Length: 532
Image (cartoon, rainbow, N blue to C red; front, side, top):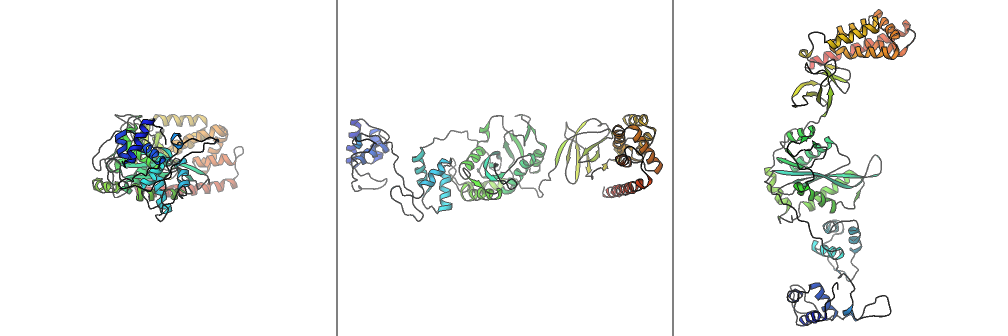
């Protein structure tokens, strides 16, 4: 017994028990808790009436003493033992074991040590051990072992059908990494619908802007539709500059949501209660199916989580609404927005500065910007097919080009300057000062390739700085003599013979190689022009 009553109150409880009063009636009359009153009645051999039952059980032999570890003993009525009333669980098959021989006690205690809750333990008992009794029996048993926990009050936000979802990351289980062979902590992505509390839970090893956007798209596909608003916190994958009134969203995330007709609504900083439904969904998964679990692969962990979602989370009765989650989702699903026919085409993005030739570099290829942008920064988006240049202030599309191979150029005719820019004139003047032959080769490159050759002219000046102006001028003289005014010829000439001039036998393979290189470039240009 957890409490010791004074003698008058104790005698009153015993007298009412002998009159056949129930424990609930005794508690109402005396103010003594039923557990305490029951302990005193059992100690004097008074049979207790079961809830809803009539009559009395056979008398139970009263305990007369208790062993305390010394030679002395006292009557049980005077001793506080702090014992927990014994609770038994049914075995697989429905038979109730007697005493402490219940087969699940050790497993339940081990799961409690790992931090799991009663619901998670009950679900594992049903799935893995054929447990046939109710959840309440496990709940009472766990409550006796560790005591009851009072839930914390939360703000309730009501939303319309199909109106809102909430998203968040949480800590996932340990999963063995296929590459390293070691266990790694995963990340748990949760999307919860605001009205029905239907959740989609996905596991990943690492996060990025693209992974974050792909998880949203996968969740929308699983739900069969998309809500109109998504509530999230200010993590970097979704929000670049937190501001409650004018947040700066990640461009890729913003475009994915726009593709599905969803508006992002970031919370205030340090305001988790605004998305308390998904916070609860994360905690529910962490404490119930995943607590203390380890998996050998990410696929196995996701399959286990999906099984739990279908068989337990969707079929549970929600505590506040007192309705099944699957039934509420069946009502909400028709109000979700229809999914687009094609999935979103993901791209990479970055910032680039427009070079002197009016181009920006993306994966070693060059794309022209509109006139007036030289030296300024633009935002660039690119995928396997297109490269888009955007105004960094307004997001306006400046230019869209087909993707080029490494070293290629893509410039619109209207973007080519009608006269040589002053910066290019100064660059050619520098080349003539370094060497006469160097200047002549650079003039030939500019005459043939216009602004697309500015980078090659700068490369020629870089060769003169690296190998010396005399050696570079000698290489350019050889190029002019052979009629090959190409930067690649001069560079390879200097790499093979930075000091002495090459012999004719050494120059011939170099010319053949360069001729093939020029033919390939010409074929590629013709193909690109035919495609455009």
